[in-house]
Image (cartoon, rainbow, N blue to C red; front, side):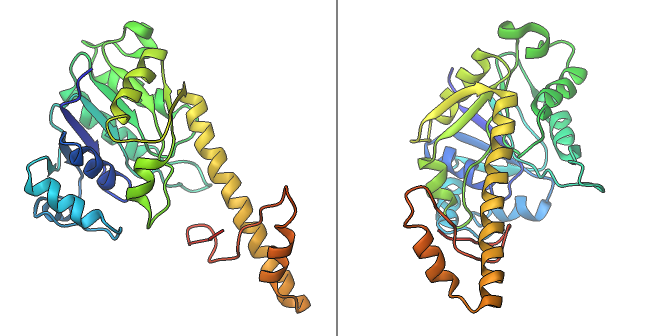
Length: 268
């Protein structure tokens, strides 16, 4: 499938770099965001977030006509949803941003389009996204209705990047692509291979969703363990840096360095 026009919905720390990466491969990219300030800033060839090298990529993409930002979706060949998924009270995932994006995309969908959810999401969110779009477009078939023969392809491909290194890691890191069907995954893989140099590994949507949550949980546990060690060593008058260096000489131990904690920067 040819992906001449790609739409990225949500132009934050993941969406904007992803849009710029596609534009750098001379694809027409439509960025969509409800934040008018972000849209205006991008259309000036500037950025509203902080990420090394991104300003140059966005400036070049806008100047060359490969990237433009809008506040509402337009027709495209593929749509990437990269919107926030915060928690509500009781630590329940808030899918309202995904729902809003799904319902905004639905009116401009056409047969053969691909929709990929990149937002970190609970298991089943990709399937729910497909349900929301199907409700609005009964004239089109979706994977939950027609399987491999669906008009619209749906997949989940979560980001796996570190802030401050997003541009490099978007290109070099492996990507796991979870299609709602095998064909959905294959079409999504073909799109990501436009700029991804890492391996694009196919799985199903639920496994991809769970894998991202597993990666985050594993990383968070490692950071928490390192920080607990730091607190204990401080009370016992032990140099935590020496302790970790010595412990990591064990062939099966790899303790992180203490840092600001989850959401901050914890370096190996």
